[in-house]
Image (cartoon, one colour):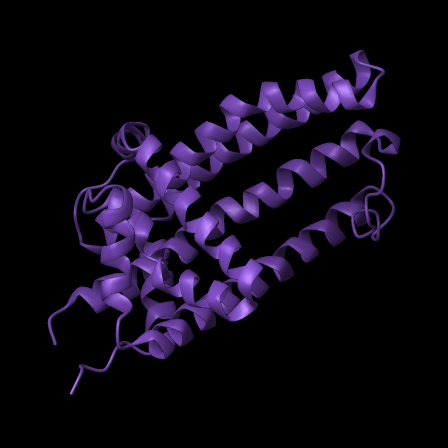
Length: 253
């Protein structure tokens, strides 16, 4: 009989404890994400101010943002490496993990593209295949960053871990993800409410943005940077819950 996996509540607790113990490391990652989001905002302000044609401005913004997007990939890979180390009680530091992220960026992006392609193909067929592929390949990035397994082998190894336990794994992926997702959304809503109140309109940041060209630069700055702060702080929780489950799946029965 297969060994019983950790309960979702245990996964959430272990992920939170790891974040709490090593919050300084994750705060530094968040600072990097915030810095990059400010540059994104600056590029957006410059292009919409200096280039009248909106399509051309969007194209130039995309070109300018490409290196920043790649560096975001480095940060995610680095945060994954740091979280794996801290969960295993190994030494971790931001600079060393950033080096790992740079070194493994290309295979990390490649496996992410393959997983995304599989999920999109699943949606083309029906929603159910997309869900199946999402669970099968949920640990492919861990195989790349932590175990140094590349390409299709990372996908196969992830699928093998899920074999025979698909429903149990789905349940243990979805529950922590939903808990953390709604917690972040609630915290972000509170931050928007407080910032809006300070600026004289509590509902300022809750409307649907239909035309960014009509928004003040301060509004764009807040809606660009503030969400990234919360997503940066929550990133180790999402990564941690995935890694905790991954390590549990790898344990011998």
